[in-house]
Length: 231
Ligand SMILES: NC(=O)c1ccc[n+]([C@@H]2O[C@H](COP(=O)([O-])OP(=O)(O)OC[C@H]3O[C@@H](n4cnc5c(N)ncnc54)[C@H](OP(=O)(O)O)[C@@H]3O)[C@@H](O)[C@H]2O)c1
Image 1 (spheres, rainbow, N blue to C red):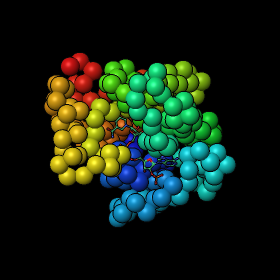
Image 2: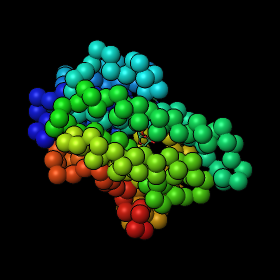
Image 3: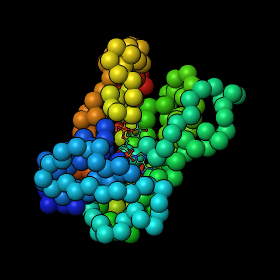
């Protein structure tokens, strides 16, 4: 797909990986609607980007005033994430972690009908889907479901395409720690990776752009993880 002149909607497009994708799409000549619950957090956005307030769990409001489009990305975390061993897991927290999946499935269920026939969808899972660290059973379960969902629905939505970007440990506002604690967190999280540093939101955005541009790719997952899976 030639992104220039296309219309894109990016859920979670106001922070981190979604915001970097919004900026990349705009730089390639797309008009972009960046959506989140509190879109002002995006700060100054480039020309061609408009901000929209919406919760991905609010099915009725998702596509009001913004269809049709050519590109649909969701990087919205959806809500909180439960951390810890499964046998000590608060099951309400575990189930709430699936808000990310419900947000993604909402936008595909109600967005595909507004997507151009040659359009592309990209969702975002995470390395724990296939290689989890201690305490990551909830995000591993959710990420695995996201990847299985995209593989499973790809044939049904053809000729439209759907793919998943799986980030490793990426330095974004999703982690609220600051200063030395933040630095130590990412150093510890990535020390054993083949590329021992946190990735950037823009490195993930480049993977998302590849999945949008390449018309021969559907139903698959691309890892941007500093070699975490093979370390
Ligand atoms: N950063 C990492 O290391 C990492 C690793 C693996 C996977 N991931 C995945 O990558 C994706 C993007 O993460 P990120 O690091 O870029 O996080 P982020 O900087 O916290 O951005 C998340 C975005 O999602 C929006 N959002 C969250 N819940 C929403 C909802 N219910 N409705 C609408 N928008 C919502 C947020 O805005 P509002 O709060 O304003 O709604 C924000 O724009 C997520 O799926 C995350 O699980 C990240």
